[in-house]
View 1 (cartoon, rainbow, N blue to C red):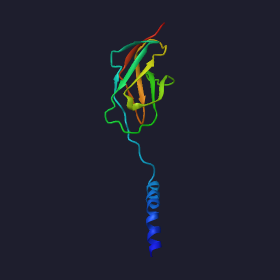
View 2: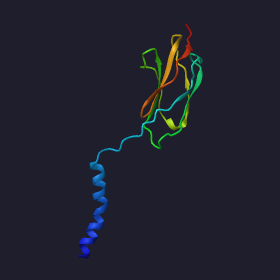
View 3: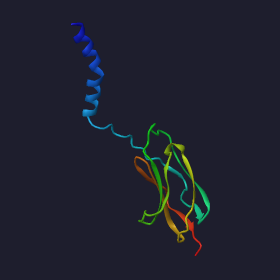
View 4: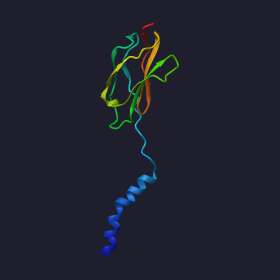
Length: 126
C-alpha cells in the first residue's frame, strides 16, 4: 500500500497541471489606459521631440507588447510611432513625423486593448 500512496502523491501535481491546461488559456487582463497628454488643444510641430503620457493606475503585472500609432481623421496606419515598449511606464518620448498640417490628429495606444487620445494639431513644414 505504501507504493500506491507514494505514486498517488507524486502524480497529484501532474494531474492538477493537466486539469488547468485542459480548461484552456488564461484570459488576459484588459488594460486600456487613459491618454493624458497630448490633450485637446495641444499643438505639435513636425520633427520635434514630444512626450506622450497615460494613466497606469490599475495596470496588470503582465501586459502584451505595446504600440503607439498616429491617426489622422479615420486613418491609423501606417503611422507607427513606437512599439514593444513597457506600457506600465506611463510615458514615452517620440519624434513627431513630418505630416501634413491638420487639427484632426489622435494617438492610439495599443496594449491588450486600444485607447485614443483627444484630437490635437500637428503643424507640418508645407
